Image (cartoon, rainbow, N blue to C red; front, side, top):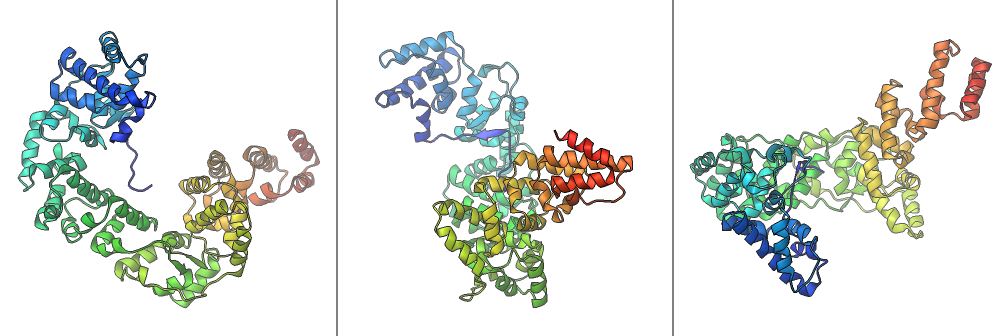
Length: 546
């Protein structure tokens, strides 16, 4: 989904309840004692045996539950002498101390990941051998929460390559903007680049928002609260808003960072990004019109034609769209409006209406009673209520509407021909989009051939690849021949196309046949056509099919 960028780092923070899960195999009446004893033994090992300063050994032992369990699980359980057994195990079986360290700071490095290759030398197991541990210690000493240091590696691990003395100087430079120590830590955890690179534009924006517009007075003076606010601010930079250019917009919209959760902000951002317009434009629209975050864009029912007229579309244009996209018209829900607009290829038109007009039109529309009721759809719903699988079918119907299909006969047709779960259908739809099929064209394809989404995902990709590379066609041609995707690639498409190509090369085929004629016709018709071209070729085809 949007804003969830894939990284090579997993951030793992353990709650009290989650912390005990690795020890679930230990009888509950002994579990608390075993956890305490194993933590104490690890603390003693790191501090006494490995000469690690007590404060760091304590942090690691208390915040590495999974790694600790991985060791505990290798020791035969006995409630009476567990502590001695665990200490003996540590004495004779060296452990990978860096695994414990990384888990304790909330960082899980896969050995094959770019992050591991970047910061973890090969064959390194002891903390004392890791040259960047002094950076971790320095950050902890500056007040950064030990369990959250992994956040500094959300994009890359450049901060661990910085000399501790440079970090100290950089933090003092950030304070010169007017931020106090707690603010610096919250900003640093959300925007690690401020700790090792020139980020004056970002810091200038944050100064305007937090100090000039006094956002800090509305936030509890602790790292967690400031980090939460900074995470919300970061959403808009992730959309592409230019650092150093949006300070005033952020300031005038400061209430959204206090009143709404991060999930709520993401929901609204994703809603407008589904219009497939520029992400920067979405960010600027929402910052310039922050009242949108208060709009209820949930399950209200709309009439697509009435809604478009409400936004100023003329009668002639409405008629043209209804003729071209009949599967989109009828009723739908406000939450599906972005998909409705994309299904008619008018996402940019709609966004411009919001941008240059009044976004409150979104919630000001009221559908007249009885408007756009479709008898075919109503009849289909009645039949659906009589089925034992109605809940399952209803989920699929919701998916069809979420694509932009209205409450009409095309939605009922699609429902009757799609035979997979909602998640599987969504996966296949996304694959076709990623292969280059335009959204509006794909919806039109599903209007004619809903069975396209019943195909195996890997086969869909292979069919598109063959269609474009070997057959030399454009994905836009699927508008004309959507049934192509429903035929078997190895048993039908490839043999027929290649044999027909051979016929043309040999001079037997004098006409230019369409792909639909080559692939979609029955076997009997296909052989009869070949026979008219060359009787021996028809015999050859029959032999090849045996």
